Image (tube, rainbow, N blue to C red; front, side, top):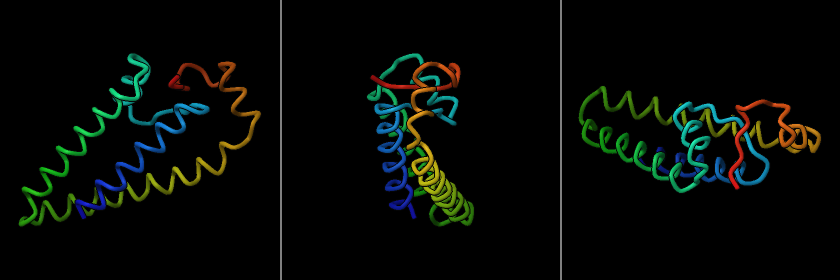
Length: 116
């Protein structure tokens, strides 16, 4: 399960960076959104996400013999699976050019983030 969590987290980061560098998006994670808005750096975002995943994986590995660790691993895996499904939905809907142009013109407000 820990490997699944790491793989889905890497996929989430990759898709996040792809969307941020192409047409932009609204980041649901307030810490990640703050990092993007204030640093404008994909590298800093990658370091942040790598650290959080490493801490999570380390804790789950340490608790692997306890029922709490098993429950935590299943919850993390299910949450990341839901995030993957949400990315699938988002990717299908973002292809509308008018929405992308509205975002670039500021129609979505300051929550819309883009990395150069």
